Amino acid sequence: MLLRPVPSWSRPAVLWLGVAGCWQPTGQLDYMVSSPPSAPASVAGILSAHFSRDAQRDRAPADAIVLVFDRELDATSLVGRAFMVVLSDGSRVRAASAVFAPASEDDENRTVTLWGDFGEPAGRIPTDVVIIERIWDERGGPLLGASAKISAYEDGPRLVAMRGAQAGGGACGGSAQIIRTYWSDDVLDVGDDDLALIEVELADGRSVHPTGFDDTLGNGTDTSDDNVLELCMSETVEARSVRIVAGSFAGPAGWRTGPIRGAVSPASP
Image 1 (cartoon, rainbow, N blue to C red):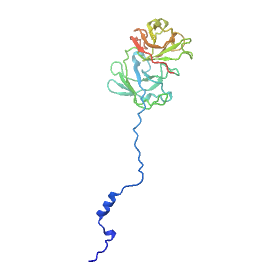
Image 2: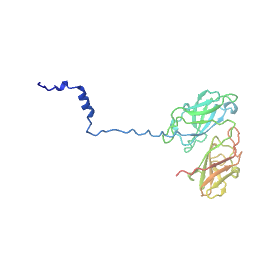
Image 3: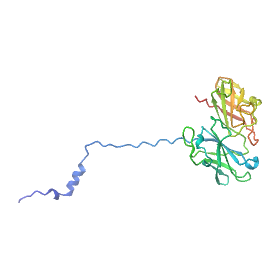
Image 4: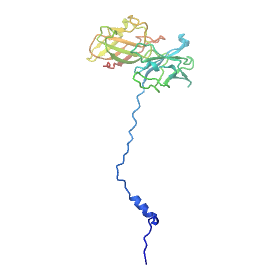
């Protein structure tokens, strides 16, 4: 019996599948491992929000809410419509305007006053504030989404933060160091007789009083009071904490401050 070779095109397909299944690439395979997403930039926090002025009770042109941030803001991005205020009945309104105030010096761009119609004293009152459009801090960080509860109109100014500041540059002339205090609203009725009501604890354990205030109406260094009050210190030893007797200062609506005690953040280099 004569055997003939089987043409290659008629060989079983299983043979070809088996051969194909055994084939392995001989070159190098290049591939990429996906990197984990970078952490999002931190959102600047609103340290405090206070219902400062009521148009009806204060006979003001509009209601006002004072915000204090944890860093300096970019003035060119500041717009009122970026701030949404939530009222006690659940309704929401946008601020008509937003300005740097009451502190408005070049190195005090942490305080913003919102003006608008924020309810009525007998019923709807502002309870929360949220940033709903893009606003930036001085380093380009986004503030979108920052929010805070709004303290009541009847609350007096509250101390929000304290930090050391470099002496010189015209502030507290001749002082060894400065303590810059940030408040939730204007602090009024500030005079030299209040220095004895403020006690500063130093790093060596001593307790002393400031030698004076800077940037107030009382000493003629400013044309208006604001929510940033600088304490002038003659001691070179670093200040660690501050205590202030209740009722020392007043807010714009006449409400007095409560008892205060807080730590002083070190001065920036």
